[in-house]
Each structure stands twice: as structure tokens, then as C-alpha cells.
Length: 347
Image (cartoon, rainbow, N blue to C red; front, side, top):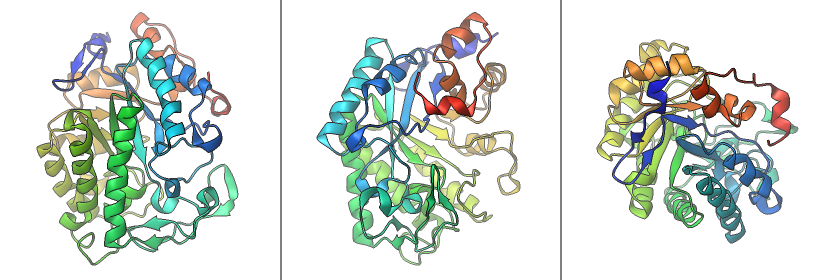
């Protein structure tokens, strides 16, 4: 019944996945002092190495990108060494793992890095407080200068180089879920009037510059990206956003990336301005490798892949509850239901 999920899948000349199941990036807030990955994290990822590809939890490219407690970084020698233990453990089990590169933009907080301000495309603050630290209210970010944007492009590329040094098989650019790159792609958070705002071409400029810099650093075959054309977390809606993604997706297709990964928590949702589901919109505008996500079961994922709706499926919370998720699905065994209590521990 699930045969299609267990077919090998060739991403490109350099990477072939042993099956079509990805472990989705799952923020666990379990890094040690200095935001260094721990031995427990190495064991956690190794237990899930049966996935065709693991995408790591979102990993900070530089200190001012932190918006949650105890999230790992990839910008110091100690962090690189910590991640090397993780990647070695995954590879020893026959797995592949990409690092998801992250800057949280206006979702960051100066509490974590001791700076004077957070940064974003525009000086537009979020309402609310930091998850897990509800006493911290979000701050009004500083609008990035053009020079600061160019520095960020360099920082993303350096983080990608650090990922390869740490033993990762590639990187996924976190361009989704209302973090920094995604903030450039939506009118609610990008109110600039310069070459980085006010039109689809300008609003796509920073994400494409980051993508090009990472391709130059580590190769297109090792570069994926996650996008949220219709997942409004920490973001106000605006129907003009579709025009931005209408422009961005063909540009990404020209770059022949490893994949594009949908960033959404529930792909059954329909968006009027996308004419339906976010995954269907992406498939219409992007014909290369597409990763679906958002509440799919093995049954529904198998059917969607068979119908060509996407090529790979990313599984999130079930992988927390079931380190042996792939084996259970392959053998037709029942899986353990996820519960929020499971977030308190790695296992």
C-alpha cells in the first residue's frame, strides 16, 4: 500500500534518497551552553536515520537570529564540532541530513544575544510574547540597511559552508513561517520602498541573493529552500503576496535546487488568493522536486505522491512520537500518537 513511499528518489547527480520520507525540521530547544548541539541530540537524530532525509531543527546563522531558548547555532567552532557528532551519528546509521539555516528576523529578541535591537525588512513589530518565555514581549525591529542586507547574505553563505564542515549533506534555507527571509516576501512585514521592497521582483531579491550565495558556496545540488506562500504564522494576510510567489517560484526553478519544501502546518487549508491548497499552488508554479507537508498520513501522502501533487513527504510530530516511524509504516504497524508532553524530552 505504501510502496511508493519506499522507492529510492534521486534528488540530483550527487544525492539519492533511500525513500521518499523526510523528517521535517522540528524545533526542540535542547541545545547546550553556547547553543552547542549535545550528545543527546546526536542520539535523537541517529534514531531517526531511516528517513530518506532528515532536515535538522532550525539552526541559527548568527547570534541576533535567535528567537527561542536553547536553539542551536552554526556560527562558532564549538557549534560546528557539536553538529559533527550529530552528522557522524546519522551517517553511521546510513542516513542523510541537511541543516536548516535560520534567522528569525523580527521574531528574535535581544534577551538572547544582548544586542541593542533586532532586525527585519521594516520596523514593524509583532504583537505578543516569546514562546516558552511569555514575560518577553516582542520588540520593534530595526529596518535593515542595504549594507546590512548584504552582510546577511554573506552570513547565510558562511553558515552553509559551516554546515558542510560539520558534515551535513546539504542545507535547507528557512524561507518560511514568518522568519527573516519570509518577512521580505510578504507585504505585511516588508514595507520598504527601495530595491528590496514594493514589488514582487524587489521583495524576492534578498531570498534569491541568499540562495545564489549558498549555491556558490556549496552547490545547487546541496541547497533546498522552505517557503510559506499561504501559511500565515505571525503574519497578516495580503492578497498581493501571491504576486511575489508567482515571480519567485520560476526564479527558483531556474536554479535547479535540490528541492522546494512547503512550510505549512495543515495542508488541508484553502486560500482564496492561491485558488486552493498551498501545495497545489506550489506544484502549479514549480515542476521540480517538491516536498509536501502538513498533517499527511502515510495513506494520504502515498496517494498525493502517486497523483503527482508532490514528490516527497515531510513528516513532523509523528517522528517525535515514533523514532522508528519509517519501520512502523513499512511493516504496517500502528504508530504512537503525538502529545505535547513529548516535547519535554529527547528520545
